[in-house]
Amino acid sequence: MLPSFRPNDLVLCLKLKKYRMGSVVIVKNSDHGPILKRIKGIRDSRLEISSENKEYSSETTKITYDLDDVIGKVLFNISKLNFFNFKL
Image 1: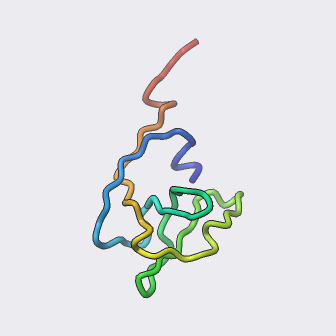
Image 2: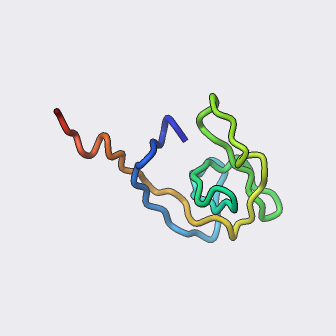
Image 3: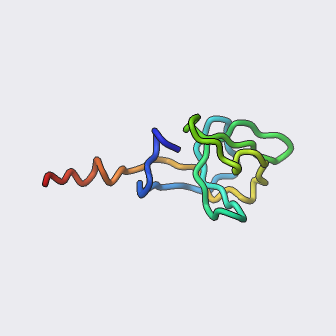
């Protein structure tokens, strides 16, 4: 989900009863484990997801997910690079 999220960012998510298009969620994927993606559409209790990194094609966005697969909506993230500003 570059550029909004980076590897090893810390995220806080919350399980909700309803989700909206455009929300960033963590979804259970049987092959890859938990994945962080944006909701592209919702149809018949199924989610279509998209990736923000348009330079990288992800097989995880080619399938739909059941609402029960959603771990939660991302409320905010903390980038370790920005939070811990180390200078060597």
